[in-house]
Image 1 (cartoon, helix red, strand yellow):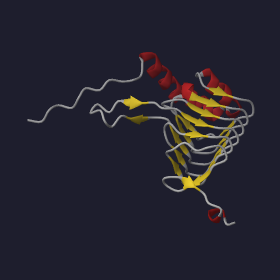
Image 2: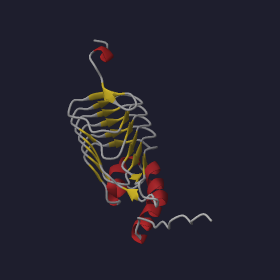
Image 3: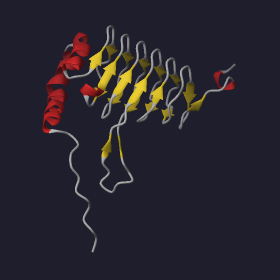
Image 4: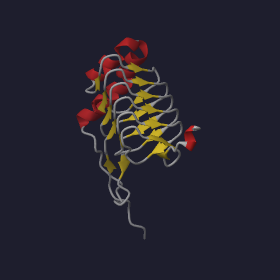
Amino acid sequence: MVAPAPARRSVWTTREKVVRMVWATVGRLAWVCVPRARGALLRAFGGSAGRGCELARSVEILIPWNVHLGSGVRVGERVILYGLGPIRIGDGTVIDYRAHLCAGTHDMSDSRFPLVKPPITVGRGCFIGLDAYVGPEVVLGDGCVVWPRAAVFKSQPAGAEVRGNPARPVSAEGRGG
């Protein structure tokens, strides 16, 4: 006889479930229809956005109260800010099309696979390239460059330039110089 799967419980409170539902319906409609209000809308749902943030129409933000953007942040089309845990993005950072920042995972050592929500921190003046992935618990120091389609699973110091899957530092030869 096979043992039944362990019971799973939601990590979300009833209030959080309701806010998520309102965000996914009314919030999404306002996001699409009133582009100039995207920063204010994010703030209204508990997140933060500094002055001069530009967020594309198709940006997907799962949990708005976990997303915190500095001033002058630019987020391109079809970017996913999967903020199960906190995502903090520093001033002047650019996140290119289809990039995915994923601040959440599951504890695979537990048969119930509980959700864990480690943060992502992106420093000031970073660039995250087209279709790049930044995983949970990653810290990118100021001025980091993540090349297109790179998959970053480990923190990187200020000024690092990484590419590949898993992402590794770019050498002088890799830059063409």
